[in-house]
Length: 286
Image (spheres, rainbow, N blue to C red):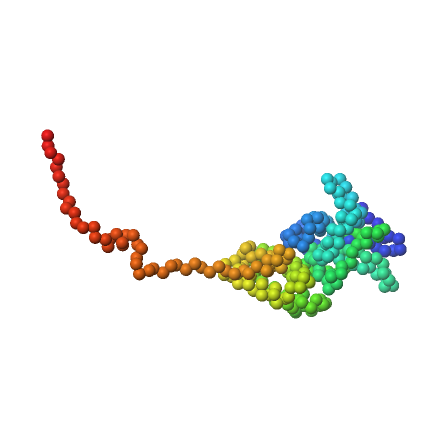
């Protein structure tokens, strides 16, 4: 049964599940459950929402009620906090509704597999805890998303709407220099952590130099193209792997032979042990 989406004043509040990749069944993108930018709670809520059918809707109140029978129920503030976490990570975004006259007619929130980086994410909107009719989660997305081609970080040849982030070109230099790995390596997550380091005062040049050091290290170790290359989001993340020197240890050199041989066998052969007369002596007979 669909919840009542219309509140007083004609404002439609919803959180909607965006359309999934075309398939007979749903396969979860591994990078979602391994997104290091999300808490365990946010990952669980995201997986729950993405597992629902298209055009499915749920209210925030319904989400709160989902855990009432669990050992640790999630209250209003906990659920809203998880939703705001998903918004900041780009998995949940607002879809403003307009009436036929163009007047504001409410806000829905759309949840999707692919996070979206917005130029305005430095000051993300939050779900107002005092809202009488909180948003729902639903899946009626009017614009069509190409899951295979959609990227969070636009490349230089994108023809669509450009992001205003002034550091995209510098990030692309780091991304191209980063060693390739076997397995997932989400570019959008790497960009998020890379940009966070810039906000801490780290320069793009320092991150590029660190990336090049790590790439040289992986090449020297023969690790490029293997799972031993760490994900870029970890490299640029709070563990600060980029600060490591990533220097390959020099191979130990074999000691050169000295003028005096230390070979025990040769030394024994050179020694003069004198001569000895060998013979057999028969013992006295009875």
